[in-house]
Length: 68
Image (cartoon, rainbow, N blue to C red):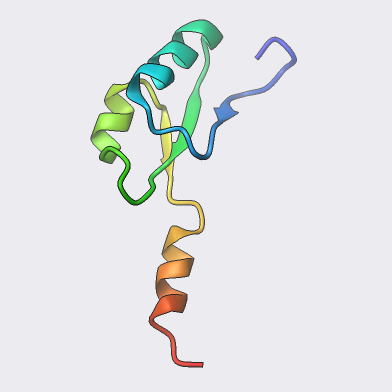
C-alpha cells in the first residue's frame, strides 16, 4: 500500500486468520476469491475481506454445460 496500491488481491487466500492479519498489517482493502470448498462469502467478509471475486468460476461453469 505504501507503494501506491489501492488494494491487495490474493487469489487463493481463504484462511480467515490470514485475511484478518493482512487487513490489520496493510491497513487497506483485501480482495479474495470465492473458491469451491472455501468459506462462504459472508465468512470471508467477516474475516476482513473487502471484496470477494468469482474470478473465472462462472465462465468455467458455463463452459462445462456447453455442447461443443
